[in-house]
Length: 281
Image (cartoon, rainbow, N blue to C red; front, side):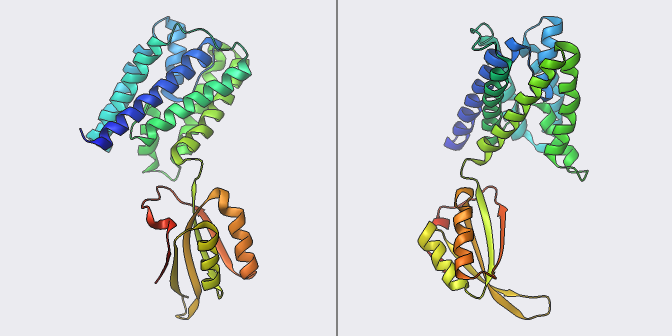
């Protein structure tokens, strides 16, 4: 096992630990659920009076096998480790003292802990929920995104909680799921989520130098060409964080109020040199 693999397994273990604490210390004692297979296992555990970990393993087995067939052995192995870790840790924390009996506090903090845990596991190549595997596979064959598919499935799962725990708890569970969903995004993408910036302007050289001076970012100049074959104004490509977005807009407007600016989310930015020097093409 190399260092990267070890780092991934440690990250998965930390994620499973956070999710277990969120479930056993906040959500389950207050009869709240999370979405996906985890939500189903919480309801089954309550109805059949059996340990949560048993259902976590049993219900996820077919999804892990499906992931093995469609997504590869490495994904299946890390998912097995993730789910087994969560199952063992929920048993370990099952008798921990209740942190709060306020359903709002339980939904917010429990959802945040579960969201952080799930995000850590996803970030390191695993999964804690078989519905994520199904969503990935359906996404490849339909126009719906993974997030939309998961939301659709969880609508029915959380709705079922109303029949088991009551409709008030189902609505509190919806709050927990929403908090978890947002925390997953932050955990996977980071607080300094990157933004890809495209700028078309006659003042491209000036704007590029201002970006380097203000943010210390690498700037690439590209010779743009229109569909009619004419060379357009200079094109700038750079990467910033979302915290720097408003300042960038002000710089572009000060240099050229008629500049064309496009800012999009950039996932998985790799390389350490995008913060150094101006590079021209």
